[in-house]
Length: 131
Image: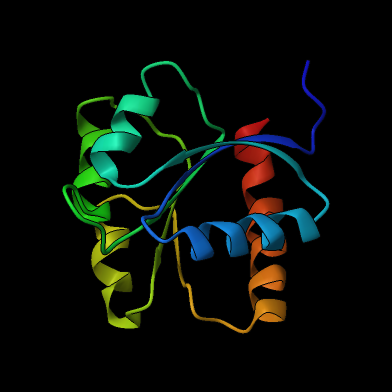
């Protein structure tokens, strides 16, 4: 069995700096993560064929296939209830992505300390579902 604090994470974002920032924030929570990365939703769907994440983090604005289309595909094509966390720099999209089936939503452009705190709370909340 995997250690409780070990997570398989699919991180879908076309911005390499944002991917790195999120990895650092997740590390700060004390979780050890194994990552698969994707540049857009289509790439993310391909990764899902042979990678079973405990949690998906996805940006909304991406080329080729955006986060909303990716979320729709994960929930409908794959019929997968995996915790799906949507990230955006545009706050007003929150209601829409939650109604599309996102588990949670946050603004990517939080101060780093706030991001770490938010992820700690989020991962703690999701732990019961990931077990």
